[in-house]
Amino acid sequence: MQRRLTPGLALLRVAGFAALLLLFWNPVTSRRVAGDAPRLVLLDASLSMGGRGGSWREALDSARVLARGGVIWRFGSDVRGYDSLPPTDGASRLAPALAAAAGRGGPVVVVTDGAVGDLRDVPLDLLRRARVVLLPRRPFFDAFVAAVDGPRRVSGGDTVRLRVSYGTAGKTDGKRETGNGKRGATLAVYLGARRIASRDVLLPDSGTISTELPFPVSRFPVPGWSALNVRLEGVADSEPRDDARLFVLEVSPQPSVVVLAAPPDWDARFLARTLQDVARVPVRSFVKVEPRSEAWRDAATLASVPASQVAQAVGAAELVARVGDAAALARFAPHGAVLEWPTARGREGDWYVQPPGASPLAGALAGIAWDSLPPATWVADLAPENSAVAVLSARLARRGASRPMVVVAEREGRRRATIGAGGLYRWAFRGGASAEAYRALVAALADWLLAAGDGKAERFVPLTHEGANGLPLVWRWTGSGAPRDLAVTLTAGSKRRADTLRFDVTGRAELLLPPGVYAYSRQDGPERGLVAVDTYSDEWRPDAPVLRAQEGAPAGRLVTTAMRDRWWLFLFAIAAFAAEWAWRRRQGLP
Image (cartoon, rainbow, N blue to C red; front, side, top):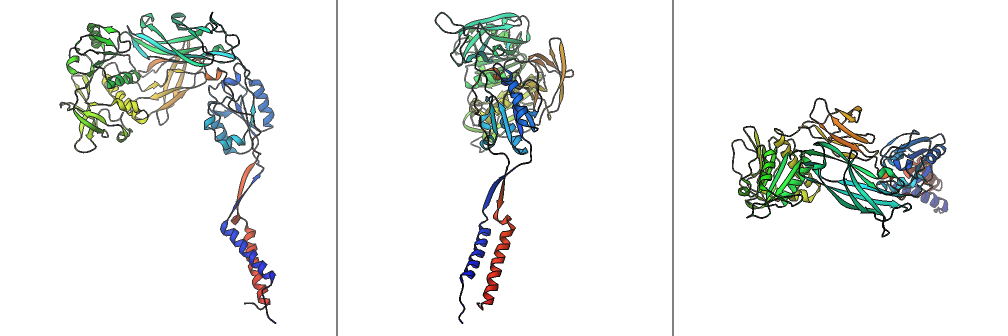
């Protein structure tokens, strides 16, 4: 009898090969399983929840009900455990809270007013997973002072020019109007209880605008650090805590740094601006615009200044920066440190800066990517001195011998630095790492030149002298060596407190303080100054919600399984091929 292949044998072979194909392909399947982690409720504890129109009590009750024996975390400036105290955080950052919740597992519920400040940083998959319970603030009208900017250090005879940004938000009920139907108000500057400047302004319908408030330094009673209070008056708004901002500045009888530019150029302009930021002492600039005239002008106001007054400022300064024509500047003889920057062009071309070698400034200039900086446009032949040390050198088109472009020298207790290159302002103009390199170079030169004079050799300085309510003040390490923790004493009126600045590896420390004006000092160091914490916060303003209420993704965790993880599929393939082999043997097939 003839043997033939039956349908049963064909079916077993097809089933065996299908199982092998699935194992080679190894598809992955996903399914959601119930998690064993309890529900996590993220409670918005930013100041807006307890501000005007906020729903803090309702948020507390909702969080307790939604937790159902689970866990409640507070989020705002950071993420921390639950307590029922009123909100104190000056920012509403949801992204760190959702990231921490994702690592924990379990269902997530967010209770907020919807005005979060980092929505762009929140991963969409984490946001879709969370259930959002929205408790929007009740609408109200608010007028506010958004920001105050101005010179940080001034000297006698200067004019302080504050740039004040102000605006309105929310409903316009209760507004005060002028005769032409516009909302009117008064911006006033107070030193203590005394008004020293004011200006009538018109409030915008919404948004923010700016204006300038000038006043002479002569209105300050004594030199030293002062905290100005810039207020918006004459407005009937519903939230008074953002109607004023503090601004800290230092008044000195004479400028400690004087910048002379003859004629003024971009290098002189950027040098004066950067010295104003990094020298931590009063800076005043004078420019000579007309080459054939002996007239000088104040660089800030362009007001005419007699040469005798310029000579008096130069004689009293601890550091004089002379930029421009050496012949025009030779008549002013400084008594302290000198920064020379002659503009007599040397050899032109693309001069690329080389990494700095051994010098007194090498430590302050470490870590800068010098190869990425724009080239200098020319480098001069600096006259050699016995005590001169090259700080930076440059090579033309990165080839040939290097030529010094910044040198420092010290003779008979007087320090001198010379910059023999042009176009360095492009470092600052470019921004980013190049601007930081320019700032580091100017700061290092100023610190070294002032070290024997008015330099304070401070180990730390406040990065910002003013802070918003609920946000920490930031401090920056400026001393030599690795950053380390330092004790600091803070005095506000009759109250005194001791704190510790804990610097991280980047030289940054934060200190959270309640609103007030604080004089800081260190018992065994030269650090002295003034910092202030405003009652103002962006959270007081009636911002529209950027989050929407949603139910969120189903609770549980997503489990993925590969086909090769299913052990029974291997047994099925083996069984199919074994059964086919046995069947074929019984039928006498090969």
